[in-house]
Length: 525
Image (cartoon, rainbow, N blue to C red; front, side, top):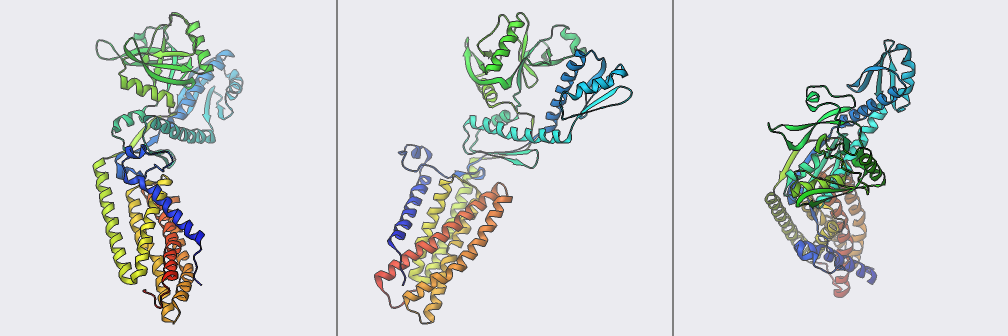
């Protein structure tokens, strides 16, 4: 006997009502939805870059810069260690992927090697009889630093983009050293490129006044110092102001806890706040060097080089310069998000206009509507009243697809629309299998109730098999695909799940309720 229990009816109706509630916000503007009460679902489907418009950036992390930075730090550490043990050397510096130096007294080679090995156990130290010593990083250490640099870059990029308020960005790794960034709805891609392309590595260092700047410009830079140039200040001939700055970092930007754009004497500035360690170092730096200048260095450019008038306790400070309100806000954003471990190179850039995205949406809506109308015409013409029931279930299927996409906050792309169009055709496959099996049972002389019962039960295995194989294909596409391919896989998988539910539960409910009410002698199928 064909039966459909009341609890099943309540379950199906409840699921369809929830589907309507979750999909309803997509038919209103975002501003209107945000004014709804909190207990009403108010999420909307997230549109992808190709539908909403925005920026597409493919960037590569310069992992070689991370290795070189570590080698530069080895140079500083080696200089301090060897001088502390009074071991003479010459030619200390980075060449290629190694640090080279020459020990003056060959009798001190072994002692120098032991001292240098204690710096870092991941460093390989080798020596020649002529006194040449080479320091190289192990292959494992280099690989770990490069992988860590990419992972850290992804996290920093995510923080910076979140600070701008961009909705639903896509940030994912591509290969070993590349990062894909898609920003739907971004109307100022140049600002985003500037924010992402800035390393934002800031530190405070003392200015070296032991040598005139002119001599440093001509190449006579003291050991332990380097020649940097100002970012905004210019001299009479239009060239940046040069500064001789100590390489040793007094306070690192890693000790920052907050940075905000504010005003001082009517000019935009950036106020800083350090953590406990940074506050102590900043206080010590200013206390021990009253009367000297210290440079605020951002990405190897001197933003400002003020004179320390008095100790600055309290763990806070201010960066002043030729800032505009926007540049001060951007610098504060960069400092709050943290510094990139290595520079980023933009390999590919695409900008999709909102008008193109709107055209894609209209084309997708038209294709979906045409597909839906043709399927409805066919199913009703082929199966009559049962086809009409399947059509109602098909509309329920569409509602559930939109509801699930909304609830899961899945990103709908143009290939995703293609998946929905494909689902419209696939949604009636299960009904076709069921109705054809019912026809066969009627031809064999079964009663209407018996034919319906056997038709639903016997067709179930074929329905599950066909949809399961398609679902496996969707899972594989999602696992190994990326971007638009994943969007297609998501909508296809959701469509498979909802179409099975509507065919097995919703259509069956309509047919069973009709049979129980009408008790027909013949089936209109």
